[in-house]
Length: 551
Image 1 (cartoon, one colour):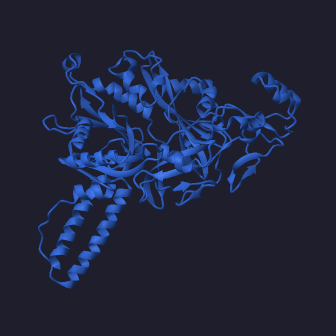
Image 2 (cartoon, helix red, strand yellow):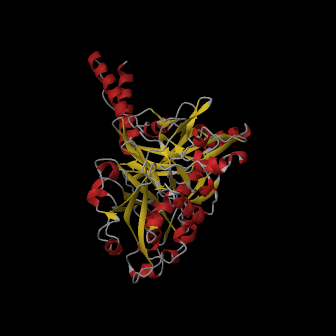
């Protein structure tokens, strides 16, 4: 987030509120990306510029977004930006035809469009570009009586006496997307993380909505479970702690257009009895699943808030033996990791990977488990977000007789590695702050791969740069400049035993095979298919060894 802000906020009044994670097919490759909307923040205007005209008529919207892949950086350790700048410049096959953001996460005030005052659109050279709103959003206020009503309702005499209004003027309010959705459907509980998507060239917000109840028979409220407060407060899920809900279904997806504020409520779980009732009360509010276009559906993801609640309940309810359950003999907990020098509870995260015994990689949400009072890994749970498999939960347990290192143990091994520890000390002595990012746990067949980025930031600076990537697998811990180098060091240590080719034709064939294998490995790396990447690295090592022997 801080890197995006330093590189791409462009002007002091723009703000990146949050970074979202999604996946796109980019230039033919299925990739995971990070993206963030560049919204306008009136609170960041200089005090002298906070006039009524500026805040209500001139500065009406944000502009564009920034997008970068999750697994690629520049040679300077900064994000490789797929979409950047104002107006948006795209380096890939994703184009934004309407970059203006009138409705978003930061837009918490009302504004007017269609007035005689030009709207600021974006900075252009030494000046500014201006625009007039052409959308259907907002409420028309063509007469003095409309303005009188809003002046009274909003407590602003300026709405009544201003001479900037015309017959085509419109007022836009409830522009904050969660507040907007809540005013239409207050009976739905909303996810804490709306996310941005580029759909047919337009910027659209996707909001996960839940039906909830605290009266489901024989169901334990999530707030009564162990460490619920600690886990749900981290990651902004604390709004579920103010009630004793014991029933929750992600039955509705809401699509909000960032330009005109149009909302579409899609019923994605027509078997939910609460949603069935709401649809009878509001027959025109919810659209059936058949109305969801493929371009929209491909961006649906399993929501983190729901997954966290389900994982929280499962800490105890994975025990199927009544006696074991009663005695709480096999309680689990969420792992502890080191983030920016502090220990904290690990949160679920999205990743593209191929699950064990699956043919293709998919976009999944994943979270590991460890036993209570121990740090070794016992299981990991995942939720799928692709096509017909959307919403399926899977649990992978490790054999109880086998020790599998957990995140806290891996963090300790990183701390104890003499080369890594020495490098951290040298950076700190040179005046840089070492920032250890989120530790990712990536299952590969019957083992685990751990990946942790290492950033450097000057003591008085705000721009962190990716300096190293730590990878741990089995008993190996490696730190290198790039993820590819770390993975090559981990998986490239196989010593092959094959016949040495003698003919020149065989040598040429091996060279071609090495190039093809390298290209396959890089493609697997971009797609997040770690198992395939490791296999290709081992295969490449064998080919190179054969080439070396043939010379």
